[in-house]
Image 1 (cartoon, helix red, strand yellow):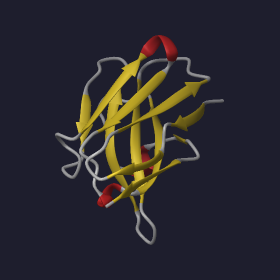
Image 2 (cartoon, one colour):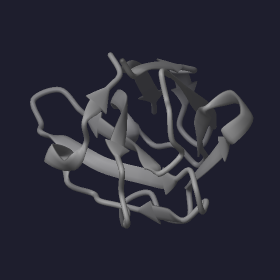
Image 3 (cartoon, rainbow, N blue to C red):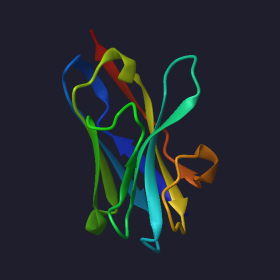
Image 4 (cartoon, helix red, strand yellow):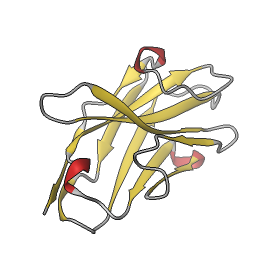
Length: 125
């Protein structure tokens, strides 16, 4: 059974940075993509970024491109989301998700098979 655990959320001032981590247990293959989604209060959950564990290919939403960076440590089965130049619009619960057996990265929530419980990121103005 795959389990995902996010960490690293918190409160930061506008312009600041945070790094989120997502540790995956129960993985039996690296032919997966691990993605980040976020949900602000009263809004739908949106795709943020994702990375393929086998190739390190990444994909970002337009809203975070150039500010957020996905990386991974295969030995630890952990992916990271480095978030720079944060603004209040980035305030949300951030979720880590895993898409099993992929050939390409998806930004579609329904394509992801496993989800973490989320970590709160709050950016103050």
